[in-house]
Image (cartoon, rainbow, N blue to C red; front, side, top):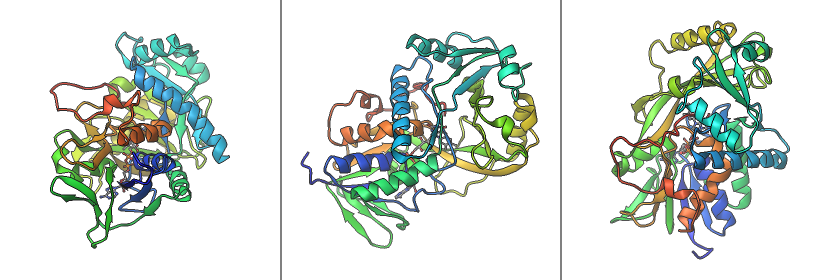
Length: 389
Ligand SMILES: Cc1cc2nc3c(=O)[nH]c(=O)nc-3n(C[C@H](O)[C@H](O)[C@H](O)COP(=O)(O)OP(=O)(O)OC[C@H]3O[C@@H](n4cnc5c(N)ncnc54)[C@H](O)[C@@H]3O)c2cc1C
């Protein structure tokens, strides 16, 4: 691909920005357009934190991507001279003894085989080392000290600044940008106010908004709404590492996970569930009874957090694919169009490796990881099992 090729990217989340940076470095003329400011308050990549982990049951690819991403998160911290990735560890606990084919068991055995030293955690260890947990309910699990959380919204701001400095033309607050077609060929982007950006290639990386921009892929991906709660305990110290790392509470079965207190004393709790199918442009509202559902979980799991004042909530959208794998490929039916979306609720941790995957796909170069995210036919009953924060 000649270095002077032009690319217009729709969407400045972690997919769009990392692709912009990587392709700019490879010599492309890159324009990135977002409907909002960067970071967009409603984008999935925004928020105070995202889990970073390599624990992916027996999933070798995502374990390897997690490992490399963690190494790069450390490098980015050093480069930024600021710790945006916090290696607080990842504690996964279950009410039951770890069982084969369970997320906790399989992650523990797979990562241990790769040479990592995990600490198996019983009720007794929980009581001694992680006193906020209800040790009479949670009996078995492990701590992986390699993993933690990243200040995702601030990372997006950093990446946008880096992209601008590298020569990416960024246009924010563009009214209703859409891909532009001449017949079946995608020729760039147009906004509702009549602005146009022509390009050799157009990359749609609009997260949960992608299916509404490209109706022909609505049968393979869609937006689902997920809730997030930020609590502000009067005393956040019991909810700080090492006694309170990033955690999953029977996450493979229940979807509950959360974070230590951040610098502002906010403790984030979330539930990674099937969610509600929505249109990304719909108003975002919590389902009725959601706060009580969270507080009931907290009463059972972290009793001392159960009555903490609520600081804020978010309704955040995944772009789920039918099989749970990301979607990064050229559209076989529309020349000039490439899609990088379908994050399925767990892509942020891979931000440090994502740009290379997308750029290799754009340039038709081989990449060890891209095949899983190729354009594919919808098949019944498939799931790649990776959909866990
Ligand atoms: C509640 C929740 C919790 C999560 N927790 C984790 C976690 O702990 N760990 C983890 O690894 N991942 C997590 N994820 C997933 C992660 O946030 C996403 O995988 C990732 O942020 C997706 O990035 P994206 O670039 O595809 O989309 P987004 O970040 O949503 O970015 C899309 C961008 O496209 C823009 N856009 C939309 N429409 C248009 C348009 N028409 N024209 C131009 N621009 C447009 C938007 O404004 C936005 O800036 C979570 C997601 C949610 C919702």
